[in-house]
Structures are given as structure tokens and as C-alpha cells.
Image (cartoon, rainbow, N blue to C red):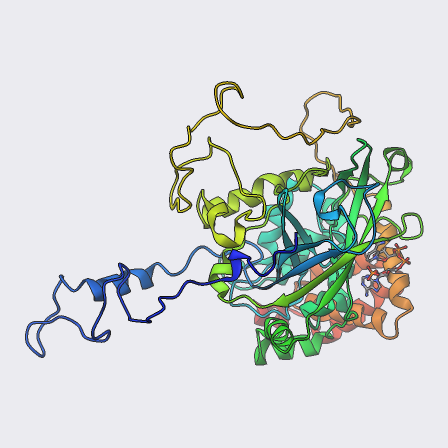
Length: 514
Ligand code: NDP
């Protein structure tokens, strides 16, 4: 499929004669006039044009995403450059040169819709592919790992990144209290990335995307593989240091959104090269960590990157609200031969994302043009009615399936996988991260070594933590120093020295902070 030109998701219908009307298409002679008694008297309830516009204005806002509220998006295409049909049978990979239209939304995580996009935060990197087998969403981040591996912790963790319930302020104590609690120190690897300069990308164009989770892909022979996806920027990684990010947050809170829009408008279409890592079930059994542990990467040396294709963003949205604010991604929106693994955080996202869209956009969110699987056409006679049904509702088609004999439908011939994992065991409440093992520090230490090869990067990490933790109380600060000392003694000491120089201990200082 390469039907970029006829794509319905980036077109707005505007009345060709441009005669201004109310919401019902009734022409309005004087848009600024109001119906009143005499020249200065009270208004009339019969003035539908006024009421129509005021009432609609009150309803312009929909709930912002919680989290990932602040974001920017663009359209483009994915093109296959290398044959991976031995790993994945999805139609989008069927031949070299094949193009599939896509839409990407980049975002920050913790901040509100109007917050600064240079904030220290992971970045969302969500892509929707409009494939002939239906929509496929890769709902990724710019970091290859995440803070938690127990999904039940997600609301707790996100609350600590947002605002204190009493003060309504960002709160360094909440932030570090959660992360330094022993069983939450599984986050250390992601915290190291967050507080490296990769935590403040200079541009959405100049950062990578990672699946983070393990997925399961299969080929047409029924063989399946664990897969991680890497979307690497062709523009080169570029980050801000802490001071640049803070300055830009004040001067131009939409710095990254502006950068993306301007680049595309100027014809400088950013691109990314897409790679996969693959792992067999046998290899997974030999790992010293779980393949379903979202806090771990797969080492490149053991699991080399294999190139798949190129992603290009060459088209700005025509309307931000219609096409970016309403874009609804979910890892459960998937195509044949690509499925979720048993990673519990991924499993819970399969529920949480569509649930969020039903709340924000309504039960028929899939009918909104940017979300519509236009390249495959959805057909399910039982998915009918509901609020804001706008696609004709399958007309006079029956609203049920019984059997193919009683009703004219065709079953998909896509094969199901023949070799599945087998799970057995009692149903139990399991808290995975009850105590952090040293294994949770191994990759954080590996990253610290990687930073050591890049001039100034270890120093920046210590500085970035220090200026943040300087706002926390002494007890929490001590926990932070101890946690980073477990990665590297010198790192812990450097953070401590700088943090204490910024926030000398003493009752007076503490009181001032409160
Ligand atoms: P290698 O030693 O083969 O390569 C190091 C990797 O580190 C690079 O490829 C780069 O990933 C990533 N990296 C470089 N600078 C930074 C930074 N400032 N912040 C975060 N990541 C950076 O990698 P290994 O596979 O042996 O992993 C070593 C460490 O690299 C890991 O502990 C992990 O923290 C980090 N890393 C690993 C990734 C993986 O999937 N293996 C992916 C990203 C980070 P990239 O090329 O993707 O930019």
C-alpha cells in the first residue's frame, strides 16, 4: 500500500463558498450581531447563533491525556528496506520497497497539556501504521526501559511525577521517596537514563524510539520470536543540558513542537531507521533476567540489531485537535503476526490505553478519521451504535453473526501460531519487585560506563540529579545518595557534594522550603 495521496485522515472539509453559518449550516448575515430588545436592551433566548457558539465554546476541551498530555504529531510513511519475512509475516513487511502510511505523536509524560516540552521526562514515541491488515500501533518511548515492572504501581508512580495533592506543586520529596523505596529501585536503570542528558532531548527529530517491552512476532511458517524494536534517528542524537532545558522551558515551552513543525514545513523531513532484535524461547530461558522485565535491555552484542526499514515524517497535520489531540494509540491495536508478550506492564497497557480513549473520545473513537483503519476497512456487525456514531453504522446489515451459513461473512484465513508458550501454575497475587536484587543494578552500571566514554556525560548526570534532589528533605536526599552510590561510589559522592552545596542542611533552610 502506498496510497498516501488519498489518505482521508489529513483532510478538512470546508464549505467551498465560505459563507459563514451556524452549526446547522444556516447562513449568518452578521456574525457579531446579537438579538436584543432595542439597541441597548437585554438579549433574546431565541438567538440561536449566539447560544450555539457560546455553548460549543464551553465544550471545546476534552480531557487531556493522563499521562502524555503534551505532544506534537506528524504524518509520513514507513518503507521496508530489508527482508524480515523469516521473523514476521505481517503484510507491511511483505516486500522491499513497500510503503505504509503512518502517523507519529511525540510527547512528554508527566506534565500537563500546556507544560514545557523540554522538561526532564521520558518522551512518548507513538506510531500508528495504516496497514491493509488494519491499524498497527507501536506505542513506544525514547528510552529502552521503564521505571516499573509491576503494573499495579503505575498510578502510584505517575502521581509522584505530577503534583502534590495539597500544594498542587511538583514535589521532589514525592518524586524521590517513590524511586528510592527499596522495592522500587528496579527503576534505577531508567532513572539513570532520565537524569543523563537523554532526559532532555533537544528535538523530537533527534531522539530514538524503543519498544522497551518484549513483543512476539511470528512468520508464516508458524515460528515465533521475542522481538524488541529500535527506531533510531537519522538526524543524530542531540540533547540539551539541564540549564539549556530549564531556560527554554521558560522562553519557549513549545520548543520541540515548533522544531518539528518548522522542519517538516521547510521540507526537511526527519527520518528514522527501524531495527529489530530477536530472541528465541531457548535463549530467553538462559538469560540472567526475565525477558518480560521492562527494566532491562537486551545487550547489543548478544542480540545484534537487524535493519528493517525507514520511517519518514514529511507531512504536518492540517488540524492539531482533529489529528493529534484525538489520535488514539494502543499496543492492543495490532496486526496478524505481531502480538504482545507476557510482560505484565504490556498486558495491562492492552487494557488501559483503549480504556483511556473511550473515556477521552468515546466508545466510537475508532471512527475519528485519524484513528480509522481506512486501509483495511473495519467490518464487525456486532460493533454498532454508541455515542457519536458517524460512519453510517453499517446501514441495514444485520447486527450479529451466527454462522457463515446464516449470514454472509468471511472468516480470515490468517494462520494462528502453532508453537505457543505454555503457562501453568496456581492463580496468585504476585508482587514481582519485592526486593531489588543486584541484578537490577547491573545494567545501570553498564550505562554509567557508556556515559564515561562520552566527554562530560558522567558529570552532567551527577549535576542533573543534584539540582533536582537539592529540593528534597535531608532524609530523602540521603536515600538518593545511597542509591546512586550502589551504581558507582564516586557518582553518589559527586551528587551528594553538589546537592549539599545547593541546599545546606539546617532547620532554617528546611523551613524556608516548606
Ligand atoms: P553497547 O555497549 O553495545 O552500546 C551502548 C549503547 O548505549 C549505545 O548503542 C546507545 O544506544 C546507548 N547510549 C549511548 N549513550 C547513551 C546515553 N547517554 N543514555 C542512554 N543510552 C545511551 O550497549 P549494550 O547493549 O551493551 O548496553 C549498554 C547500556 O547501554 C545499557 O545498560 C543501556 O543502559 C544502554 N542502552 C542499551 C540499549 C540496548 O538496547 N542494548 C539501547 C539504549 C541504551 P542507542 O544506539 O540505542 O542510542
